[in-house]
Image (cartoon, rainbow, N blue to C red):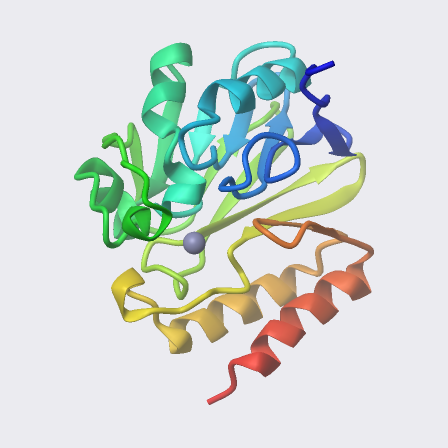
Length: 229
Ligand SMILES: [Zn+2]
């Protein structure tokens, strides 16, 4: 009948828990990385589907998320942040370059106007000034990279899952707009950093999951080729 689809397993301990065909057409693709020490929800959709995304994240991680890593403050990635923190007490982690957009509920820089949605403001619990990490287990981190370009505070993250390097690239494809504070020069440098990771899997924010490594490289290089000088 109307039962929600289950979370989709991407790799060991890595699941897709939100997105247009899982939760709401306005949602980015949202992922959960589950380790013994932390369960990190990576992005949380546009807002109206926060409860549905949380339900899938709890199913995938067996417990509520401990952290919500926001790759940037656009509403399709961050709109549900305030509600998910209210329901779980999770720590919202984001970069300083985008933190004030969410903290002030900025409708223009978050693209909320474009989605015709309200953005509930939320001050992050942890603000990164550069790269960062969240310990998933005593041995493994979710490594967070500052990858500005799409927005000033855009983040990517990667972890090892069952021997595979899984990269969460989210809006590596752009788009780019002055209203977002986009910077193509910075973006090209960020994409080169992502290419150097030689990830086996790219979990992207809108275009799905790419694998193996040559497909990940091809996708990022296609984006670079589409936005040359
Ligand atoms: Zn975006």
